[in-house]
Image (cartoon, rainbow, N blue to C red; front, side, top):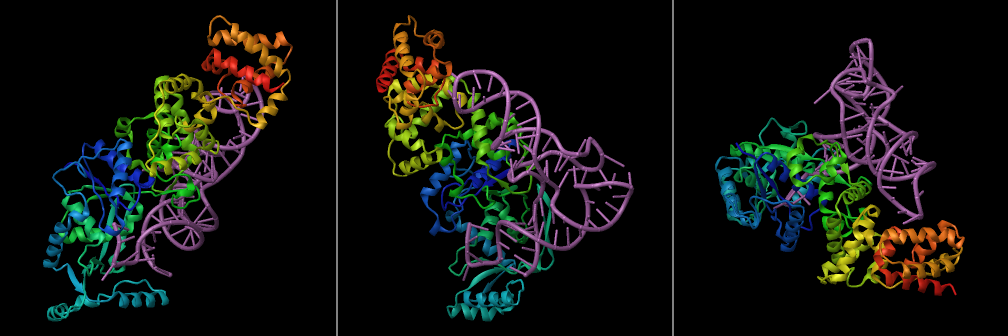
Length: 513
RNA sequence: GGCGCAUUCGUCUAGGGGCCUAGGACGCCGCCCUCUCACGGCGGUAACAUCGGUUCGAAUCCGAUAUGCGCUGCCA
């Protein structure tokens, strides 16, 4: 029998990283076993579900490279793929369960039930539904229905215990008495989650249910339904939950909870994807650069540790830096151009640099609001794109995330400017004026504009001027960029171009007069 | 309250009775390299939740306890 798995997010918001991980694992499991991966939208609660959320979920999955074999946009034998479109199927199964005596109508009102719950709580007892309506006679049921009393449908939980296996845990055993007859159809006729999932999974012929461990407690109820239906029970794998560094559920405070926020900081999707996989698993550096195909072949979901994992932004960033360092020049250049375009850098380098100075997260926040407002990003000019690519090898080992490029190399894209602090630093650098003037003259005269020629020239300066080497470098660095941290000095001067480099050094020299 | 799941350095983990005076990675600290910042190299810091048992021997097996999380809904 071939493997069929499903990922079933509810479209009540964007795709949370934890859910993204669940989707990924399902996808990998399906591919690894040559199975089918179904994407199902759990929108049984239409009041909280939006089409926009569905679109976002789909785009996040696609960005990670996850493709489904059946689901929205990809018709197949197990459709439809939105629960709101499957009500007819639920109806049919409810009728079946009714006919086989597994369901019964219940006339208890929410108020009555709440009172029972309160009482149980006051007596410090576990509350389960009393089963009062289970004993109602057929004629009484008919009479009450005819009288227009609202009723729900409950599942008749049999005595005994329910046991299920989990691919990464010990078997879980639950006493059925603790479950209590639960509602499967609301008084408005709509179907409750626990029944809907089972009917969906049965009709979609799902063989492996891979989902978050917050569903462990629901599983026994669902198994009871499988058994009532006479359907084969699938295998379960309940994944550990993903928390923030404070052991709480991931939230905005943790920097990012969705993929788009992470990529807006300049984290690469493939790195995020790999990171999500290696959480809860032994980590090996070689995995940083794994492709989706590598994951399919070598990543085994069943090796997951069952304990919850904490999302560690530091390690993610470190992985991202490692990934960047192994990219070749063209690749990095391309990625930088795409990224810088997205954050609006080419439209207004100065403004974006200001935001970026507050850190990648501030930048990501700005990008998010720009994207929410559908503000189009300015494409780079040919010169800007070219310059970015030229700079790629100069900045590679200084980047952890792509956003780091901006404070580091933003000065290449705008006129030279000095903060008060930078001006003071320059003024306080011994021999700065002489260094700048001399370097400008030498650079203007150097016959070939190459990094090697520039280096040779600059290295002459200390002896020539009687200024310490460190001071020479500091003066030139400050002079060409207005900042104390830049890519390599010779390479930077070279990348600026002869005219620009000379002009900047002269401008800086004038500042000291 | 009841039930369930989980529990090795701050974090992710290796470990499935002797190879463990517990290994790796991130972080942090120090040193080296060095034109700044980094990269890289080297070294250091730091953990078997607790208490009992089983055993010649336990991080590994068993039992309690504690803590965290989840479920306990006419939410999913």
